[in-house]
Amino acid sequence: MDILLGLQWGDEGKGKVVDFLAPQYEVVARFQGGPNAGHTLVFDAVKHVLHQIPSGIFRPQTQNVIGNGVIIDPIVMKKEIEKLLAQGIEVRQNLYFSKKAHLILPTHRLLDAAQETAKGVQKIGSTLKGISPTYQDKIGRNGLRIGDILLPNFKQLYQEKKAQHLKILTEFYQHDLSSLESEEQAFFEALDFLKTFQLVDSEYLLFEAQKNKKRILAEGAQGTLLDIDFGSYPFVTSSNTTASGACSGLGVAPRHIEEVFGIFKAYCTRVGSGPFPTELDDEVGEAIREKGQEFGATTGRKRRCGWLDLPALLYAIQLNGVTQLLMMKADVLSGFEQIKICTHYQLPDGTKTQEVPYDLVQTPVSPQYQTFEGWGELHADKIQHFDDLPKTLQAYIRFIEEATQTPITLVSYGAKRTDTLLRQKLAETV
Ligand code: IMP
Image (tube, rainbow, N blue to C red; front, side, top):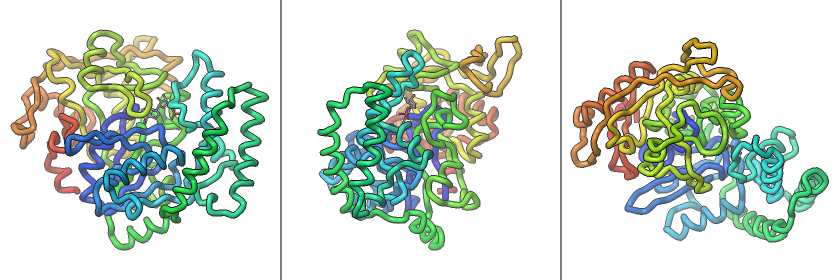
């Protein structure tokens, strides 16, 4: 199994790369997260956004698995599937749900809103899709799984969970419940719809795939710096977004991991609250946002933008055991005279480090930059090989490769499938 995951705060462009690599894999599997994700793919001049479905769904030969580590909102899922069916995509045959994936209930979404509001200025900036309360119930051994919808007493189990949630929502948060009735109706309609799909013990599907030497690609969501353990806690999501999450979120043993593709943007973005050392709260940041169209695929929120953060990238590479780096959105930096990379952090006591401190909120760091000469516009018809890239972009890439001791095997310079330079090692691996 190969793993592909984001090395920053999400939104690195995983959807485009999975779609690009999917023909080389028989199985593409999501292992964590839920509808907080938004994977954008552009082909045949149409933009597609996937939230919960693996990005291999557009390739008719690929089996797509939603693993046990994922959490599913049936209402969002139904809409997502219906959109794909309307486009003639083979969803019924090619999509498999792990019965062990947990369900996001309508009350989980209300709890998410109530908990965020209660945090006030300390709020996480959650996508409000019910992620944290659903994972809380999973870990609290109090959740409902998608396999449970096949049980004759599912409605009763649902009512029991709902009653617990309502107690918290009314007594503790005094939260508005006016939307609940219509949400519940949509929820049960969506469950009836999902019952007609393939609900399986997906770990067995993957055991079988491994036995038959089928190639599996595990597709991460969010990014390493949002990992529940290693991200900028508490400003993180509620799952393990790092490589180990692929094992627990799919039931694939660690010894089966082969390549780990780490995706990063040529700069950084972050959506939601929390520390962001290289953030550019100025016209340069604004220019990156406009040029890169850095607005959330799920919430439409403005993404915060900044220069590439090498200490954070080094941390992510080590946590995930990245074997190949894939650099996205090189075109967004076209036209800048100067481009910077943060090579070190300076700590409040004046010392320099490349380590990410325990708590970036309590230990604000001052980024130390190295400046690079910019590059001009990049055109697909002129780029076949690395040597066709502008010299200044080549220098930027080489610097990152040397600093991380990891090859950059794919350079993406536009949203389309064709705006992609594949370098030797990746070409050999896939
Ligand atoms: P949650 O996962 O919705 O609870 O949100 C927790 C934090 O992760 C917030 O700062 C979100 O903005 C961020 N987040 C969650 N999913 C994504 C994603 O797919 N891309 C980027 N940020 C995300």
